[in-house]
Image 1: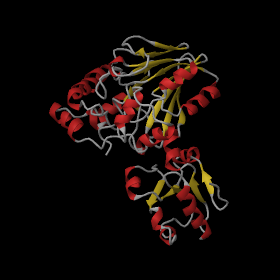
Image 2: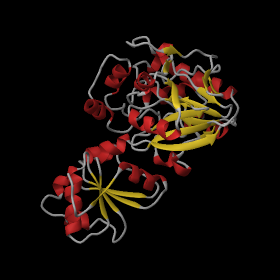
Image 3: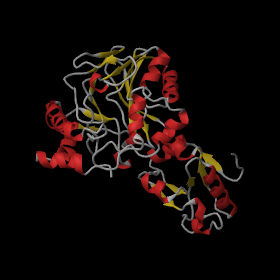
Image 4: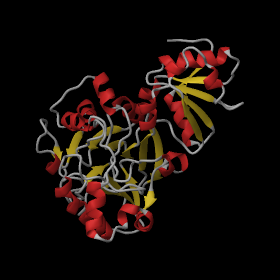
Length: 381
């Protein structure tokens, strides 16, 4: 659908505004349930929710709630309703009105590559921020080679990155069997002749071949090394594995986040895995250097986004400030991570089955399965 009255704003453009912390007013015309569950947020974002059907006869309720000046972005699920509302606003004389191209579906799928650091020996480490869903994935590149860690299903965007860097994909790695989003690691590996790695303890029901992640066995990207030390780190899943990159960066998967810790219940085994989670967080990680920079696989709140959108924190700082690392009583910890959890991710059982190769949903079905926030953390309410 095209319009001459208002302009489209792409998910990429909206993400740049959010990550640069520029002012943005969002008029979300989805239903109240969809808005309360999941919406565009940011340090300088103001949003209101007026369902589309409440504006069919009269646009005045929306005009009354808009700021006098500044950019207004109208948002809906797919884009059609937002175009109609944006046109009505423009016809009523409100300028600087945009609609979100592709709606919240497009917002959910955009990946923003953020450079983490230059690595010793000339390599680079990148974090891909999925702003609309809170997923984080990574690329290590060196000497013309690349590895992706925890890649999402938006494989075209990773391939654009490979092309822009002029590098060959040699490894794709999943830190664990994901339950909140569909992995793109296996598809990327198939397309590019790369090796797909998965923890064997998470792979008992998978239907495809993979290279088992083995504790202490290094994975090489050019001259750089992703080290799987004694960092078998179960708790979110029984096979969860962490990585140290360049002796400076701890890729913690879904075990440890900036503002919370991983939940152990998405395979239905919370009581079995809570002890593993505590052992990993309160003992295995405690033995690591406090100077390591933690790079998680998810973030839960926009407040976790740092400069340029980077989500990262020093391990020692997390042991002081992260609530999930400061529950000294074991029974209280057990109760927190098994009895006070947020709602489970949308369609997480089907997502797990898809990541095992047991379901093969269409592209549209995959998109619908992933709609909404990730909710992988204990403290994501």
